[in-house]
Image (cartoon, rainbow, N blue to C red; front, side, top):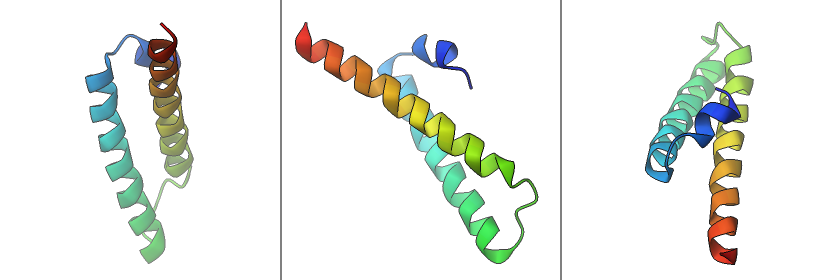
Length: 67
């Protein structure tokens, strides 16, 4: 998911997306643990998407605090 797409969403949508990605990351970690993870690159992609969402939410929080 691209940062431009994420910036168009409001905070509620971003938080919902974040929760979904965290659940997916958990499921992928469990699959990796039992040796069933077929696409190992998915875990890295999910982690980067989570970081992007957290960064955008944090930027918005800081800009609201200043203004």
